Length: 270
Image (cartoon, rainbow, N blue to C red):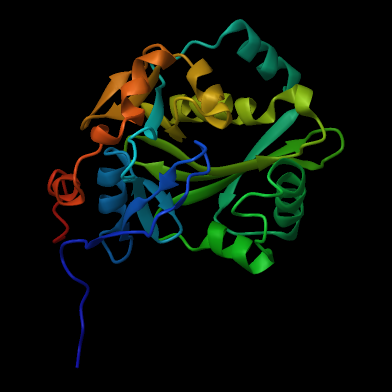
C-alpha cells in the first residue's frame, strides 16, 4: 500500500519542561515536521511567523505561563553598527570566512565540544556526541550552509555558524566559537558578518532566534540597531526592553487551538 505525507502540516505540542531562560517557569513548544518537496516553502513561510528550525522540525514557543520568547531579526537596510560593534569588526579583521555545504567535520566538532564545555557545560546540549553533532548539521531538508571563520595567520578554525538561506534572509540556526578569546566578541562578530553577507546577497533580514526580556543570556540581541520582533502576529521595531514586560504575564498566551488557527500556511501543492 502506498502512503503519502499529509498535504497540510500537522502541529503538536511538547510536554512542559523547565525554561532555560527565565527561572521558575515552564517551557512548551508548538512544532511541526519539516519534510517533503515543499519543505523550503513551509520553512520560508513559518520563519516569517516566528518559527525556528531544528533539524527536520519547525518550532515556536507556546508556553502556558508567558509569551516572553519573541522571534528577533535584523533589518539589513536599517542596521547601523555601533561604535563598539565597529571595534569588534576591526578586532576580527584577521578572520577569513568560508561558506560550505551542510557537512560536519572533526574540526567543527572539536571546536563545538570546547565551546560547550566552557560556556554551556550544564546546558541541554552538553551530552551531544559526534553523531548528534553531525545530525544537527547535516539533517536539513532545506538550503543550509556552514559558515566557517578561520584565523588567517594560524589557520585555526575559530568560529562556525549553521545558517539557513531563506527567501527573505539568513537564519542563524546555531553558532559556536573559541571561548579562549572573549575580547574578540566572536558571537557578535558572526552576527555582524551575517548582516554583511545578507547585504551582499540582496537579502533584507538576518534572523537571530529568540529574544527574551529579563533573560541575561539573550540581552546581547537588543544591542543591534534595526532589530524587529515578531509579536501579536506581526513584526514590529524593537522598543525599550521594559516595553515587553506584559509578555511575561500568564494571560498573554492564546489557547493552542487559536494559535494554530492563526498560522498562515503556504500553498504546498506544487
